[in-house]
Length: 191
Image 1 (cartoon, rainbow, N blue to C red):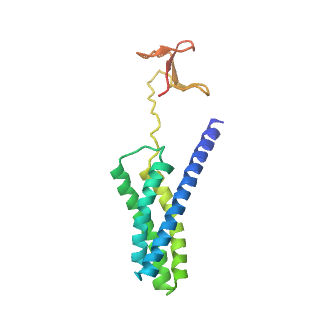
Image 2: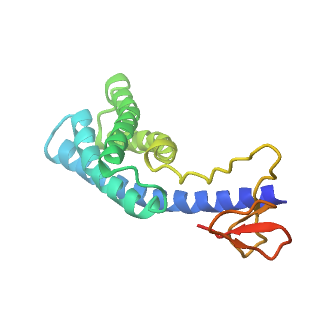
């Protein structure tokens, strides 16, 4: 039963992250789409150059929105490290998008604005799946779970009943801790 509750909690947390990530992604896509069309259509730049410039602008927005909203509850491993990794994974996402655009433009010879925008939409969709996975895995890492060491002959710490925090190690007094209400148990208050 505990496994199902834990799984449900993880799915709910991931669903919230995914919804926020999707919102940031939608705004980033609007930024990318707008700048791509300005660069490609209005300024007559090539499709790959236009995509690259538009993606750099949108990526900067997306980093700060994801860091301070979508994944704000996750550990911070340093702005510089996160930003570099974020741009590296966005670079991979850009390559994924570029493959779709280049295929449509150069292989299929579909050079209209509609065809370019369609390739941009499809490529961005494919890259978004990669980005969400890589951000969760390497950029905005999950908090480290508490590590409990078990000594031979000493029972492992047991969690308090629902609604309370801390752990109980039966029969093991801890210096500076107070005795719990369980017989022979030491109460270690939650962190």
